[in-house]
Each structure stands twice: as structure tokens, then as C-alpha cells.
Length: 109
Figure 1 (cartoon, rainbow, N blue to C red):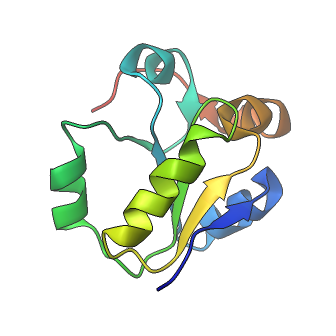
Figure 2: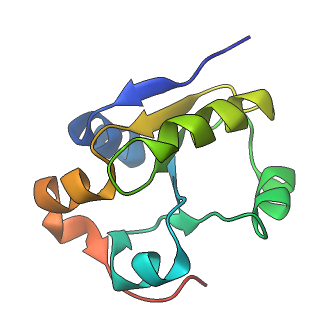
């Protein structure tokens, strides 16, 4: 069985540029006030559809507030069949300071 890997914001940015998908597991209000550009809000309601439509071999980067909850979510996604899963160290808060140009606001679509 594959396990998730922890990844720095710099490594995550490089992975995004190569087609990695970012999912944000924070609440909708936090996501709306700021999130990684192009990320998808993932919650208990959207999770089944996301998994059903996903390419399980595409790199997947999971982010939360500070990088703790994303580890549990990443482990869960590995158990759902994703083969290349990463937990963003420092979460959105570290990303926001590292790459402010790649933060956007707005409700999930």
C-alpha cells in the first residue's frame, strides 16, 4: 500500500506546475476568504463525486489550515485508491506567506 508524503510549499508549487491537483479541506468560509489558486474545496458532501471523477494516478496535494488535518485526509485518500498523495506542510497559512501571488478569494464553484 502506498502512503502519503509530506511536501513543502516550494515542492507543492513545482508539482502544481506539472499538473498536480490541490484540494482544500478547510471550511467553506475559510476557503472563500482565501485559498490556493485553482484548488478545489473538498468536504464530506463533495468527496464521493470528487473520488468518482478523479484520476487516481494524478498527483494530489491536500491542504488544511496548518498542515495537521491534511495528513489524516491524505491517508484517507490513499486508502480510497489515490497513488500519489501529498500533505502540504504548514498548510494554507504557510502557503499564503510563501506564494501570496497564488492566493485567490471566492466561493467554491
